[in-house]
Length: 363
Image 1 (cartoon, rainbow, N blue to C red):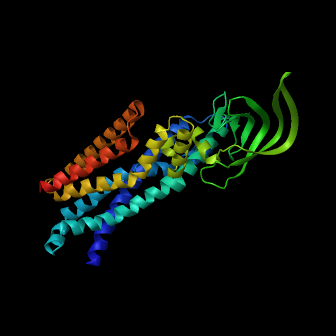
Image 2 (cartoon, one colour; image 1 turned 180 degrees about the horizontal axis):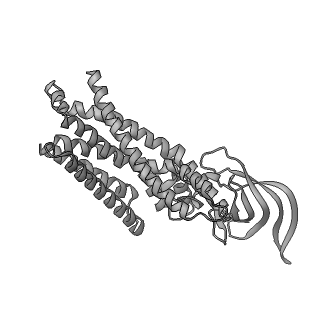
């Protein structure tokens, strides 16, 4: 029995790996062609190749669900075409037992997706975007007006973001509970020192080469006491990880970074729907992969078991494409009409599971 388990699992896993390489390779090839067209000045062919290589984990992450769908269908289809699946069932194996053998490589694909989406792809994506911007001589991730951040009664403005995470040309405005200006600080650079908590509430930065004005109010009016400094440590409540939203889209951020960004925006009374949507998309991607593989299994054992391999692949890809279109439609609607992000991501997955169950019942 263990031998059959390994045989089915290895057949399906090899099919998934082959499909993943084909789909991912095509995406990377088209992206490389686009980047070579954009080469100019400092952004040459070497930089374009580096950009594509750094982007490759994210592209592989994006095609994991469809690769699992087509790979599971191709692997089981090859077993069915050679009558091996019939022999396995004649030996006493139930559809549930065969399905479990198929789910074993699916779990590996799901773990690979979590690894790429949380630890590998976001970090390399950030390096790719920063490297391309620097090669083109652009300011990293910022408009010409710079960027504003807020933490409680402290407002921070900076003009540029260093690739190492340092802030350039920084201004810090501190207000009291009555929104009266207490202190204004300007510095050439701010370097992150560290934080004790994951939320970054106690995050501290070191300001370098700056000036500070402390404002006081008296009967004579508003007075300011200027002071210059070489280095000064301040608490800004800002983590470098949260600044990656200036460079990459929320869909490409890590799960933990999305969670922190969403909580931070909510705490400031800002719209966090984009980060909530990106968070649930990444959290539920393993379930999405599982649902698509379940659809592939239903195609083999359901009413399409006697259809040709080409027909199965066409129908499966069409169903997966429809699920993707529905998911993106619901996601855009959730952003426009403030619908729950969890519902927008979860509903197409549940529909795929329902479609697979209906196909199996029609056997």
